[in-house]
Image (cartoon, rainbow, N blue to C red; front, top):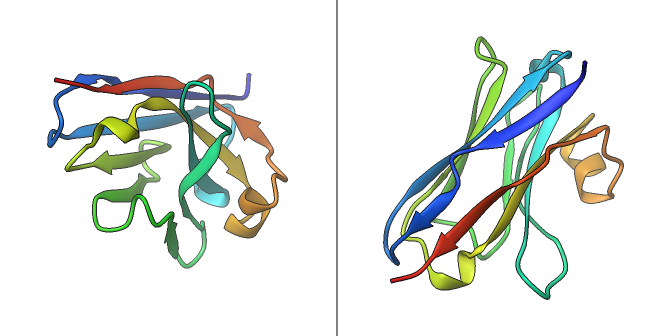
Length: 123
């Protein structure tokens, strides 16, 4: 069964950190680009970061630059999103998605979606 499962969300104070995980099963993550998206209450889903499978090039939304880091562990079939210096406006449900490339991710040509993990940044 093909699945992407996110974990690592939770409640964190402003300025804190979280590491989200996106674990794949039923397919080899190393051959796919992985993107992270988020959707805040009442807002549209937005792209946060993406990593290509071949050259491991990465992309970040302006809101994530300098604070978030995407990485992958192909041996674990898992991609991570390290989030530092979290702000209340980072509160959202975070989703990972797999596609052939970050270009496909950006144009919504998604092969697989995860179910999401909730991040709440609040004091």
